[in-house]
Amino acid sequence: MGRFYITTPIFYVNGDPHLGTAYAVILADAIARWHRLIGDEVRFVTGTDEHGLKIAQSAEAHGVSPQAWVDVTSAQFRRAWDALEVSYDDFIRTTEPRHHRSVQRFLERIHDRGDIYLGTYEGLYCVRCEAYYQPGELEPGELCPVHHVACERMREENYFFALSRYQDRLLEHYERHPEAIWPESRRNEVLRFIEGGLTDISITRTSIDWGVRVPWDSRHVFYVWYDALVNYLTAIGYAEDSAEVAAWWPAAHHLLGKDILRFHAVWWPAMCLAAGIDPPAQLIVTGWLLNEGEKMSKSLANQIDPLGVQRALSADALRHYLVRSSAIGPDWDVSLEALVALYNAELANGFGNLVARVGSLIVQRLGGHVPDAPATPPDELAIAETIEAVRAGWERWRPNDAMDAAIGLVHRLNAYLEATEPWRLAKGSAEAASVLGTAREGARLASVLLSPAIPDGAERARRALGFDEAGPLAWQPGMGGATITKPAPLFPRTDLDAVVGRR
Image (cartoon, rainbow, N blue to C red):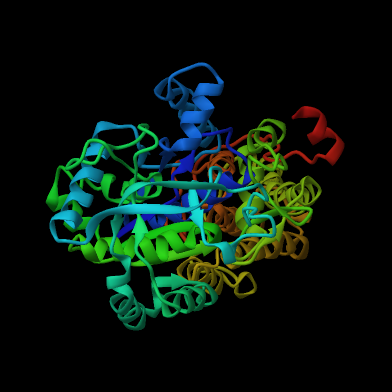
Protein backbone atom coordinates (compact mmCIF):
# COMPACT_ATOMS: atom_id res chain seq x y z
CA MET A 1 0.00 0.00 0.00
CA GLY A 2 1.14 3.50 -0.72
CA ARG A 3 0.02 6.93 -1.88
CA PHE A 4 -1.22 7.51 -5.40
CA TYR A 5 -1.93 10.99 -6.76
CA ILE A 6 -3.65 11.24 -10.15
CA THR A 7 -4.98 14.28 -11.98
CA THR A 8 -6.87 15.10 -15.13
CA PRO A 9 -6.37 18.29 -17.07
CA ILE A 10 -8.69 20.94 -15.73
CA PHE A 11 -11.27 21.50 -18.43
CA TYR A 12 -11.89 24.81 -20.14
CA VAL A 13 -15.42 26.02 -19.39
CA ASN A 14 -16.40 27.52 -22.72
CA GLY A 15 -18.98 24.85 -23.53
CA ASP A 16 -20.58 21.64 -22.36
CA PRO A 17 -18.59 18.50 -21.50
CA HIS A 18 -18.15 16.23 -24.55
CA LEU A 19 -16.90 12.70 -25.04
CA GLY A 20 -13.28 13.79 -25.30
CA THR A 21 -13.34 15.39 -21.85
CA ALA A 22 -15.40 12.51 -20.46
CA TYR A 23 -12.77 10.07 -21.74
CA ALA A 24 -10.01 11.74 -19.73
CA VAL A 25 -11.96 11.94 -16.49
CA ILE A 26 -13.44 8.43 -16.74
CA LEU A 27 -10.04 6.92 -17.51
CA ALA A 28 -8.47 8.71 -14.56
CA ASP A 29 -11.37 7.66 -12.36
CA ALA A 30 -10.97 4.00 -13.30
CA ILE A 31 -7.24 4.20 -12.51
CA ALA A 32 -8.00 5.85 -9.17
CA ARG A 33 -10.59 3.19 -8.34
CA TRP A 34 -8.09 0.43 -9.10
CA HIS A 35 -5.56 1.94 -6.73
CA ARG A 36 -8.17 2.25 -3.98
CA LEU A 37 -9.07 -1.38 -4.62
CA ILE A 38 -5.50 -2.54 -3.99
CA GLY A 39 -5.32 -0.51 -0.78
CA ASP A 40 -3.51 2.67 -1.82
CA GLU A 41 -4.35 6.04 -0.30
CA VAL A 42 -5.56 7.94 -3.36
CA ARG A 43 -5.89 11.61 -4.24
CA PHE A 44 -7.83 12.06 -7.50
CA VAL A 45 -8.23 15.63 -8.73
CA THR A 46 -10.12 17.18 -11.61
CA GLY A 47 -11.68 20.59 -12.12
CA THR A 48 -12.26 23.53 -14.42
CA ASP A 49 -10.02 26.16 -16.01
CA GLU A 50 -11.92 29.46 -15.81
CA HIS A 51 -9.64 32.32 -16.84
CA GLY A 52 -8.38 33.70 -20.15
CA LEU A 53 -9.46 35.69 -23.17
CA LYS A 54 -11.83 33.06 -24.52
CA ILE A 55 -13.83 33.03 -21.29
CA ALA A 56 -14.01 36.82 -21.16
CA GLN A 57 -15.25 36.90 -24.76
CA SER A 58 -17.86 34.19 -24.12
CA ALA A 59 -19.16 36.00 -21.03
CA GLU A 60 -19.43 39.25 -22.97
CA ALA A 61 -21.29 37.50 -25.79
CA HIS A 62 -23.81 36.18 -23.24
CA GLY A 63 -24.20 39.54 -21.55
CA VAL A 64 -22.92 38.44 -18.14
CA SER A 65 -19.79 38.91 -16.07
CA PRO A 66 -16.97 36.37 -16.46
CA GLN A 67 -17.56 35.13 -12.91
CA ALA A 68 -21.27 34.61 -13.51
CA TRP A 69 -20.48 32.80 -16.75
CA VAL A 70 -17.96 30.39 -15.21
CA ASP A 71 -20.20 29.72 -12.21
CA VAL A 72 -22.77 28.29 -14.63
CA THR A 73 -20.40 26.45 -16.94
CA SER A 74 -18.23 24.94 -14.20
CA ALA A 75 -21.33 23.56 -12.52
CA GLN A 76 -22.19 21.75 -15.76
CA PHE A 77 -18.92 19.83 -15.57
CA ARG A 78 -19.42 18.91 -11.94
CA ARG A 79 -22.95 17.65 -12.63
CA ALA A 80 -21.71 15.66 -15.62
CA TRP A 81 -18.92 13.96 -13.69
CA ASP A 82 -21.29 13.12 -10.85
CA ALA A 83 -23.74 11.57 -13.33
CA LEU A 84 -20.90 9.51 -14.80
CA GLU A 85 -19.92 8.11 -11.37
CA VAL A 86 -16.60 9.99 -11.21
CA SER A 87 -15.16 9.58 -7.72
CA TYR A 88 -12.95 12.67 -7.59
CA ASP A 89 -11.50 13.69 -4.23
CA ASP A 90 -11.17 17.37 -5.15
CA PHE A 91 -12.66 19.58 -7.86
CA ILE A 92 -10.46 22.61 -8.49
CA ARG A 93 -11.87 25.84 -9.87
CA THR A 94 -9.19 28.31 -10.91
CA THR A 95 -11.37 31.20 -9.72
CA GLU A 96 -11.17 29.94 -6.13
CA PRO A 97 -9.17 32.07 -3.65
CA ARG A 98 -7.03 29.06 -2.66
CA HIS A 99 -5.93 28.69 -6.27
CA HIS A 100 -5.11 32.38 -6.64
CA ARG A 101 -2.91 32.10 -3.56
CA SER A 102 -1.13 29.04 -4.96
CA VAL A 103 -0.47 30.64 -8.32
CA GLN A 104 0.83 33.85 -6.80
CA ARG A 105 3.07 32.05 -4.32
CA PHE A 106 4.44 29.63 -6.92
CA LEU A 107 5.22 32.22 -9.59
CA GLU A 108 6.45 34.79 -7.10
CA ARG A 109 8.97 32.21 -5.94
CA ILE A 110 10.22 31.83 -9.52
CA HIS A 111 10.38 35.63 -9.87
CA ASP A 112 12.31 35.99 -6.63
CA ARG A 113 14.82 33.40 -7.84
CA GLY A 114 15.49 35.50 -10.95
CA ASP A 115 13.82 33.46 -13.70
CA ILE A 116 11.00 35.88 -14.60
CA TYR A 117 11.72 39.19 -16.35
CA LEU A 118 9.81 41.98 -18.15
CA GLY A 119 9.74 42.25 -21.95
CA THR A 120 7.52 42.64 -25.02
CA TYR A 121 5.97 39.78 -26.97
CA GLU A 122 4.60 39.70 -30.48
CA GLY A 123 3.21 36.57 -32.06
CA LEU A 124 0.36 34.63 -33.60
CA TYR A 125 -2.26 33.62 -31.04
CA CYS A 126 -5.14 31.13 -31.25
CA VAL A 127 -7.89 32.31 -28.93
CA ARG A 128 -9.49 28.86 -28.85
CA CYS A 129 -6.23 27.19 -27.79
CA GLU A 130 -5.25 30.16 -25.59
CA ALA A 131 -1.78 29.62 -27.03
CA TYR A 132 0.84 31.33 -29.21
CA TYR A 133 2.18 29.46 -32.24
CA GLN A 134 5.39 29.80 -34.20
CA PRO A 135 4.86 30.36 -37.96
CA GLY A 136 6.23 26.91 -38.78
CA GLU A 137 3.61 25.26 -36.57
CA LEU A 138 0.66 26.79 -38.43
CA GLU A 139 -1.32 25.59 -41.41
CA PRO A 140 -1.26 27.69 -44.61
CA GLY A 141 -2.96 31.02 -44.12
CA GLU A 142 -1.74 31.26 -40.50
CA LEU A 143 -4.43 28.80 -39.40
CA CYS A 144 -4.35 27.04 -36.03
CA PRO A 145 -3.29 23.38 -36.55
CA VAL A 146 -5.92 22.19 -34.06
CA HIS A 147 -8.95 24.38 -34.78
CA HIS A 148 -8.20 25.37 -38.41
CA VAL A 149 -9.07 29.02 -37.76
CA ALA A 150 -7.01 32.16 -38.35
CA CYS A 151 -4.67 33.13 -35.53
CA GLU A 152 -4.51 36.72 -34.31
CA ARG A 153 -1.30 38.75 -34.25
CA MET A 154 -0.79 40.18 -30.78
CA ARG A 155 1.83 42.49 -29.29
CA GLU A 156 1.99 43.49 -25.65
CA GLU A 157 4.22 43.97 -22.63
CA ASN A 158 4.66 40.64 -20.86
CA TYR A 159 6.67 39.02 -18.15
CA PHE A 160 8.72 36.13 -19.48
CA PHE A 161 9.84 32.90 -17.87
CA ALA A 162 13.46 32.05 -18.70
CA LEU A 163 12.70 28.61 -20.08
CA SER A 164 15.89 28.57 -22.13
CA ARG A 165 17.93 28.25 -18.92
CA TYR A 166 16.33 24.86 -18.23
CA GLN A 167 17.05 23.00 -21.46
CA ASP A 168 19.93 20.95 -20.05
CA ARG A 169 18.21 20.30 -16.74
CA LEU A 170 15.10 19.00 -18.51
CA LEU A 171 17.18 16.66 -20.67
CA GLU A 172 18.99 15.42 -17.56
CA HIS A 173 15.66 14.89 -15.79
CA TYR A 174 14.24 12.76 -18.60
CA GLU A 175 17.49 10.81 -18.92
CA ARG A 176 17.35 9.94 -15.20
CA HIS A 177 13.60 9.25 -15.31
CA PRO A 178 12.70 7.61 -18.63
CA GLU A 179 9.36 6.59 -17.10
CA ALA A 180 8.37 10.24 -16.63
CA ILE A 181 6.49 10.36 -19.95
CA TRP A 182 4.39 7.43 -21.12
CA PRO A 183 4.10 6.09 -23.78
CA GLU A 184 7.69 6.17 -24.96
CA SER A 185 6.77 7.69 -28.34
CA ARG A 186 5.59 10.84 -26.54
CA ARG A 187 8.81 10.96 -24.52
CA ASN A 188 10.80 10.84 -27.74
CA GLU A 189 8.69 13.65 -29.17
CA VAL A 190 9.40 15.81 -26.12
CA LEU A 191 13.13 15.08 -26.21
CA ARG A 192 13.33 16.09 -29.88
CA PHE A 193 11.56 19.35 -29.08
CA ILE A 194 13.87 20.18 -26.16
CA GLU A 195 16.98 19.24 -28.12
CA GLY A 196 15.87 21.66 -30.85
CA GLY A 197 16.39 24.55 -28.44
CA LEU A 198 14.09 26.28 -25.99
CA THR A 199 13.11 29.95 -26.05
CA ASP A 200 11.81 32.01 -23.16
CA ILE A 201 8.01 32.11 -22.89
CA SER A 202 5.49 34.81 -22.13
CA ILE A 203 3.61 34.14 -18.90
CA THR A 204 1.51 37.30 -18.32
CA ARG A 205 -0.98 39.48 -20.19
CA THR A 206 -1.91 43.15 -19.98
CA SER A 207 -4.59 43.14 -22.69
CA ILE A 208 -7.12 41.37 -20.43
CA ASP A 209 -7.84 41.48 -16.72
CA TRP A 210 -9.72 38.18 -16.27
CA GLY A 211 -7.10 36.12 -14.51
CA VAL A 212 -4.85 35.85 -11.47
CA ARG A 213 -3.12 39.15 -10.71
CA VAL A 214 0.68 39.26 -10.73
CA PRO A 215 1.58 40.04 -7.10
CA TRP A 216 4.62 42.19 -7.93
CA ASP A 217 2.91 44.13 -10.80
CA SER A 218 -0.87 44.57 -10.65
CA ARG A 219 -1.04 45.75 -14.28
CA HIS A 220 -0.55 42.12 -15.37
CA VAL A 221 -2.51 38.89 -15.01
CA PHE A 222 -0.91 35.49 -15.44
CA TYR A 223 -1.38 33.86 -18.81
CA VAL A 224 -4.12 31.25 -18.47
CA TRP A 225 -1.89 28.21 -19.06
CA TYR A 226 0.55 29.01 -16.26
CA ASP A 227 -2.33 29.75 -13.94
CA ALA A 228 -3.96 26.43 -14.86
CA LEU A 229 -0.88 24.23 -14.46
CA VAL A 230 -0.49 25.26 -10.83
CA ASN A 231 -3.82 23.58 -9.99
CA TYR A 232 -1.93 20.35 -9.41
CA LEU A 233 -0.25 22.02 -6.44
CA THR A 234 -3.38 23.87 -5.28
CA ALA A 235 -5.05 20.50 -4.74
CA ILE A 236 -2.39 19.47 -2.21
CA GLY A 237 -2.36 22.76 -0.32
CA TYR A 238 0.69 24.44 -1.86
CA ALA A 239 -0.15 27.86 -0.42
CA GLU A 240 -1.47 26.49 2.85
CA ASP A 241 0.18 23.27 4.09
CA SER A 242 3.78 22.30 3.36
CA ALA A 243 3.35 18.91 5.07
CA GLU A 244 0.52 18.02 2.69
CA VAL A 245 2.67 18.99 -0.30
CA ALA A 246 5.52 16.86 1.00
CA ALA A 247 3.16 13.91 1.41
CA TRP A 248 1.90 13.96 -2.20
CA TRP A 249 4.56 15.65 -4.33
CA PRO A 250 6.32 14.87 -6.62
CA ALA A 251 4.61 11.45 -6.87
CA ALA A 252 1.91 12.91 -9.13
CA HIS A 253 0.56 11.23 -12.25
CA HIS A 254 -0.87 13.71 -14.75
CA LEU A 255 -3.26 12.17 -17.29
CA LEU A 256 -3.49 14.45 -20.34
CA GLY A 257 -4.15 14.55 -24.06
CA LYS A 258 -1.34 14.74 -26.58
CA ASP A 259 -2.39 18.24 -27.67
CA ILE A 260 -1.29 19.70 -24.32
CA LEU A 261 1.87 17.62 -23.97
CA ARG A 262 4.30 20.49 -24.51
CA PHE A 263 2.78 22.57 -21.73
CA HIS A 264 3.02 19.63 -19.32
CA ALA A 265 6.31 18.07 -20.42
CA VAL A 266 8.38 21.19 -21.04
CA TRP A 267 6.87 24.33 -19.51
CA TRP A 268 5.53 22.74 -16.31
CA PRO A 269 8.57 20.70 -15.16
CA ALA A 270 10.87 23.62 -15.95
CA MET A 271 8.69 25.90 -13.83
CA CYS A 272 8.75 23.36 -11.00
CA LEU A 273 12.54 23.27 -11.13
CA ALA A 274 12.62 27.08 -11.16
CA ALA A 275 10.38 27.16 -8.08
CA GLY A 276 12.67 24.77 -6.23
CA ILE A 277 10.54 21.63 -6.36
CA ASP A 278 10.88 18.41 -8.33
CA PRO A 279 8.87 17.88 -11.53
CA PRO A 280 5.85 15.56 -11.36
CA ALA A 281 6.63 11.87 -11.42
CA GLN A 282 4.82 10.90 -14.59
CA LEU A 283 2.76 12.11 -17.52
CA ILE A 284 0.33 9.59 -19.03
CA VAL A 285 -0.51 10.84 -22.50
CA THR A 286 -3.66 9.81 -24.34
CA GLY A 287 -4.45 10.12 -28.00
CA TRP A 288 -7.49 11.89 -29.39
CA LEU A 289 -10.96 10.50 -29.72
CA LEU A 290 -11.85 10.90 -33.38
CA ASN A 291 -15.21 11.21 -35.08
CA GLU A 292 -14.78 10.34 -38.75
CA GLY A 293 -11.10 11.21 -38.55
CA GLU A 294 -11.42 14.60 -36.79
CA LYS A 295 -10.52 15.31 -33.17
CA MET A 296 -13.63 15.52 -31.03
CA SER A 297 -13.94 19.02 -29.56
CA LYS A 298 -16.46 21.69 -28.66
CA SER A 299 -15.30 24.12 -31.31
CA LEU A 300 -15.58 21.61 -34.17
CA ALA A 301 -19.15 20.65 -33.16
CA ASN A 302 -18.52 16.92 -33.72
CA GLN A 303 -19.16 15.70 -30.20
CA ILE A 304 -20.99 12.68 -28.88
CA ASP A 305 -22.88 13.80 -25.79
CA PRO A 306 -21.69 11.64 -22.87
CA LEU A 307 -24.77 12.48 -20.81
CA GLY A 308 -26.96 11.48 -23.73
CA VAL A 309 -25.36 8.03 -23.64
CA GLN A 310 -25.72 7.92 -19.85
CA ARG A 311 -29.43 8.74 -20.09
CA ALA A 312 -30.07 6.29 -22.90
CA LEU A 313 -28.14 3.35 -21.43
CA SER A 314 -26.17 3.98 -18.25
CA ALA A 315 -22.98 5.55 -17.00
CA ASP A 316 -21.47 2.07 -16.90
CA ALA A 317 -22.13 1.53 -20.61
CA LEU A 318 -20.14 4.63 -21.50
CA ARG A 319 -17.41 3.99 -18.94
CA HIS A 320 -16.91 0.39 -20.10
CA TYR A 321 -16.64 1.49 -23.73
CA LEU A 322 -14.09 4.22 -23.05
CA VAL A 323 -11.86 2.16 -20.74
CA ARG A 324 -12.12 -1.10 -22.67
CA SER A 325 -11.90 -0.10 -26.31
CA SER A 326 -8.41 1.26 -26.85
CA ALA A 327 -4.95 1.41 -25.37
CA ILE A 328 -3.80 4.66 -23.81
CA GLY A 329 -1.75 6.52 -26.40
CA PRO A 330 -3.08 6.08 -29.95
CA ASP A 331 -5.88 8.09 -31.51
CA TRP A 332 -9.02 6.05 -32.04
CA ASP A 333 -12.37 6.47 -33.76
CA VAL A 334 -15.44 6.30 -31.57
CA SER A 335 -19.05 5.69 -32.53
CA LEU A 336 -22.38 4.91 -30.97
CA GLU A 337 -22.52 1.78 -33.14
CA ALA A 338 -19.35 0.42 -31.56
CA LEU A 339 -20.51 1.39 -28.07
CA VAL A 340 -23.84 -0.44 -28.45
CA ALA A 341 -22.14 -3.52 -29.92
CA LEU A 342 -19.67 -3.73 -27.02
CA TYR A 343 -22.42 -3.13 -24.47
CA ASN A 344 -24.50 -6.00 -25.82
CA ALA A 345 -21.56 -8.39 -26.21
CA GLU A 346 -19.78 -7.88 -22.89
CA LEU A 347 -22.24 -6.30 -20.45
CA ALA A 348 -25.66 -7.62 -21.53
CA ASN A 349 -24.73 -11.05 -22.93
CA GLY A 350 -21.55 -11.43 -20.87
CA PHE A 351 -21.45 -10.13 -17.31
CA GLY A 352 -25.16 -9.37 -16.98
CA ASN A 353 -26.08 -12.80 -18.30
CA LEU A 354 -23.64 -14.50 -15.90
CA VAL A 355 -25.16 -12.79 -12.86
CA ALA A 356 -28.70 -13.53 -14.04
CA ARG A 357 -27.92 -17.21 -14.65
CA VAL A 358 -26.17 -17.75 -11.35
CA GLY A 359 -28.83 -15.94 -9.33
CA SER A 360 -31.71 -17.66 -11.10
CA LEU A 361 -30.14 -21.11 -10.72
CA ILE A 362 -29.57 -20.57 -7.01
CA VAL A 363 -33.27 -19.76 -6.68
CA GLN A 364 -34.32 -22.71 -8.87
CA ARG A 365 -31.99 -25.43 -7.56
CA LEU A 366 -31.32 -24.30 -4.00
CA GLY A 367 -34.48 -22.41 -3.06
CA GLY A 368 -32.60 -19.11 -3.03
CA HIS A 369 -30.25 -20.23 -0.23
CA VAL A 370 -26.74 -19.10 -1.12
CA PRO A 371 -24.15 -21.93 -1.04
CA ASP A 372 -20.59 -21.72 0.21
CA ALA A 373 -17.78 -21.41 -2.30
CA PRO A 374 -15.27 -24.28 -2.27
CA ALA A 375 -11.83 -23.80 -0.75
CA THR A 376 -10.12 -23.68 -4.14
CA PRO A 377 -11.47 -22.75 -7.57
CA PRO A 378 -11.42 -25.12 -10.54
CA ASP A 379 -8.26 -24.87 -12.62
CA GLU A 380 -10.21 -24.04 -15.77
CA LEU A 381 -11.27 -20.68 -14.31
CA ALA A 382 -7.59 -19.56 -14.11
CA ILE A 383 -8.32 -17.33 -11.13
CA ALA A 384 -4.75 -16.54 -10.06
CA GLU A 385 -3.65 -15.92 -13.65
CA THR A 386 -6.62 -13.60 -14.21
CA ILE A 387 -5.92 -11.51 -11.13
CA GLU A 388 -2.27 -11.18 -12.12
CA ALA A 389 -3.19 -10.16 -15.69
CA VAL A 390 -5.62 -7.54 -14.44
CA ARG A 391 -3.06 -6.18 -12.00
CA ALA A 392 -0.40 -6.04 -14.72
CA GLY A 393 -2.74 -4.20 -17.07
CA TRP A 394 -3.41 -1.40 -14.61
CA GLU A 395 0.21 -1.15 -13.48
CA ARG A 396 1.46 -0.89 -17.07
CA TRP A 397 -1.07 1.83 -18.03
CA ARG A 398 -2.99 -0.65 -20.15
CA PRO A 399 -6.48 -0.60 -18.67
CA ASN A 400 -7.90 -2.12 -21.84
CA ASP A 401 -5.75 -5.20 -21.20
CA ALA A 402 -6.92 -5.28 -17.58
CA MET A 403 -10.54 -5.20 -18.72
CA ASP A 404 -9.86 -7.86 -21.35
CA ALA A 405 -8.56 -10.18 -18.63
CA ALA A 406 -11.58 -9.49 -16.41
CA ILE A 407 -14.00 -10.13 -19.26
CA GLY A 408 -12.08 -13.33 -19.99
CA LEU A 409 -13.04 -14.58 -16.54
CA VAL A 410 -16.69 -13.79 -17.27
CA HIS A 411 -16.50 -15.88 -20.45
CA ARG A 412 -14.88 -18.78 -18.58
CA LEU A 413 -17.55 -18.66 -15.89
CA ASN A 414 -20.32 -18.81 -18.48
CA ALA A 415 -18.48 -21.72 -20.15
CA TYR A 416 -18.18 -23.41 -16.73
CA LEU A 417 -21.95 -23.26 -16.32
CA GLU A 418 -22.43 -24.75 -19.79
CA ALA A 419 -20.01 -27.58 -18.97
CA THR A 420 -21.41 -28.43 -15.50
CA GLU A 421 -25.10 -27.91 -16.39
CA PRO A 422 -26.32 -27.15 -12.86
CA TRP A 423 -29.90 -26.96 -14.19
CA ARG A 424 -29.73 -30.75 -14.63
CA LEU A 425 -28.47 -31.43 -11.11
CA ALA A 426 -30.83 -32.53 -8.34
CA LYS A 427 -32.43 -29.71 -6.41
CA GLY A 428 -30.73 -29.14 -3.09
CA SER A 429 -27.90 -31.54 -3.89
CA ALA A 430 -24.34 -31.06 -2.69
CA GLU A 431 -23.16 -31.14 -6.31
CA ALA A 432 -25.51 -28.30 -7.29
CA ALA A 433 -24.39 -26.32 -4.25
CA SER A 434 -20.72 -26.82 -5.15
CA VAL A 435 -21.14 -25.75 -8.78
CA LEU A 436 -23.28 -22.72 -7.95
CA GLY A 437 -21.08 -21.73 -5.00
CA THR A 438 -18.14 -21.76 -7.41
CA ALA A 439 -19.99 -19.72 -10.04
CA ARG A 440 -21.27 -17.23 -7.47
CA GLU A 441 -17.82 -16.59 -6.02
CA GLY A 442 -16.38 -16.34 -9.52
CA ALA A 443 -19.03 -13.75 -10.41
CA ARG A 444 -18.20 -11.77 -7.26
CA LEU A 445 -14.53 -11.74 -8.14
CA ALA A 446 -15.35 -10.73 -11.72
CA SER A 447 -17.43 -7.85 -10.36
CA VAL A 448 -14.46 -6.66 -8.29
CA LEU A 449 -12.12 -6.84 -11.29
CA LEU A 450 -14.61 -4.96 -13.47
CA SER A 451 -15.53 -2.39 -10.83
CA PRO A 452 -13.01 0.32 -11.81
CA ALA A 453 -14.87 0.69 -15.12
CA ILE A 454 -18.44 -0.25 -14.12
CA PRO A 455 -18.79 0.64 -10.42
CA ASP A 456 -22.58 0.77 -10.34
CA GLY A 457 -23.15 -2.48 -12.24
CA ALA A 458 -20.49 -4.27 -10.19
CA GLU A 459 -22.17 -3.26 -6.95
CA ARG A 460 -25.64 -4.23 -8.18
CA ALA A 461 -24.29 -7.61 -9.28
CA ARG A 462 -22.84 -8.33 -5.85
CA ARG A 463 -26.04 -7.36 -4.10
CA ALA A 464 -28.10 -9.50 -6.46
CA LEU A 465 -25.94 -12.49 -5.50
CA GLY A 466 -26.21 -11.86 -1.77
CA PHE A 467 -22.83 -10.23 -1.04
CA ASP A 468 -22.92 -7.35 1.44
CA GLU A 469 -19.43 -6.12 0.48
CA ALA A 470 -17.12 -6.30 -2.48
CA GLY A 471 -14.75 -8.60 -0.63
CA PRO A 472 -11.08 -9.26 -1.35
CA LEU A 473 -9.19 -9.26 -4.62
CA ALA A 474 -8.75 -13.00 -4.26
CA TRP A 475 -10.80 -16.20 -4.18
CA GLN A 476 -12.91 -16.17 -1.01
CA PRO A 477 -14.13 -19.58 0.24
CA GLY A 478 -17.38 -19.93 2.16
CA MET A 479 -19.54 -16.79 2.38
CA GLY A 480 -22.81 -18.66 1.95
CA GLY A 481 -25.94 -18.47 4.09
CA ALA A 482 -27.83 -15.53 2.64
CA THR A 483 -31.10 -15.88 0.75
CA ILE A 484 -31.65 -14.23 -2.61
CA THR A 485 -34.44 -13.80 -5.13
CA LYS A 486 -34.27 -13.96 -8.91
CA PRO A 487 -32.13 -11.01 -10.08
CA ALA A 488 -33.47 -8.27 -12.31
CA PRO A 489 -31.49 -7.78 -15.55
CA LEU A 490 -28.33 -5.77 -14.91
CA PHE A 491 -27.78 -4.68 -18.48
CA PRO A 492 -30.84 -5.20 -20.73
CA ARG A 493 -29.97 -5.71 -24.39
CA THR A 494 -30.56 -2.76 -26.66
CA ASP A 495 -30.01 -1.58 -30.23
CA LEU A 496 -28.71 1.57 -31.87
CA ASP A 497 -32.13 2.90 -32.82
CA ALA A 498 -33.33 2.62 -29.23
CA VAL A 499 -30.27 4.41 -27.89
CA VAL A 500 -30.53 7.24 -30.41
CA GLY A 501 -34.23 7.61 -29.66
CA ARG A 502 -33.74 7.73 -25.89
CA ARG A 503 -30.98 10.35 -25.90
